[in-house]
Length: 285
Ligand code: AP5
Image 1 (cartoon, helix red, strand yellow):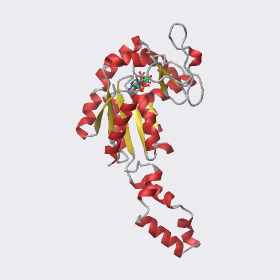
Image 2: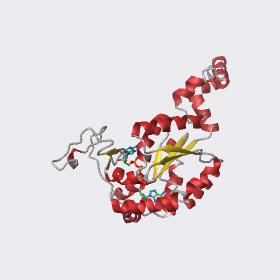
Image 3: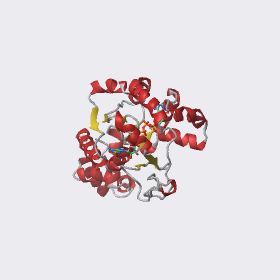
């Protein structure tokens, strides 16, 4: 697979014939045309080959609001060195910047409804062409319905590509409200915290036992954390309805392709990560 971290490519291919022949040719014709090979490191040659010929790792984190996509996604990013593309984060960014898309999305998002398909399909079609997606990417929050899934499949098929892994987080709906209503996020990175399950180091509680907003800061940057406008019990009901009626059918679409892996998202965060890692590994073999 072309998704293994660069370090691994180098180690695995120490005796690679392409590299050996490139090195030999470089040694024979040092200067002139041989400079092409000499100018490139062994790792560069291997990386170029993986990027050119191997399929990209195209995976999806899938689950209800609060299922853990935004919590486990960044860990997968660190492990595979491919970006997480969250349509929710991209839309929230557009809202914060007041762009045309942001203006259209603002009220819809706060109510818990879905933004129109053409907007999100356009966002993703542009985003996956960017340089950091060249060896793969993790879709988070997209596709959200069958029309989006079909549009995704078509845009990938145009390059002979397809989704290779759907990691579906199963969580009892009864715990989702507590998760979503206790969530605080770092706007810039999307890092998610939870007042009970994953508190930031800086958190201090007031006399009422609730966190003091000024004490909620990102562990890495110290920036102030925020709560999402749609993280209310009322908006969550609408988000869950949309998930059940429009998003869950996507699993029937990808299921027959043999690429859906189920994860027990109700377990503690570290345990969920253990399961995620195990299932990423199987997908890599
Ligand atoms: P989006 O941003 O995609 O939100 P969502 O799908 O509702 O998902 P969440 O971000 O709420 O859940 P998560 O699974 O990431 O939860 P997290 O890991 O943070 O979409 C928002 C809106 O944007 C949509 O409603 C729509 O309007 C619009 N939109 C986006 N994409 C769209 C599309 N494709 N088409 C149309 N509209 C679109 O976890 C939640 C909390 O639980 C955290 O505090 C975390 O610390 C905690 N937690 C996580 N795991 C555990 C655990 N195992 N145990 C205990 N606590 C845990």
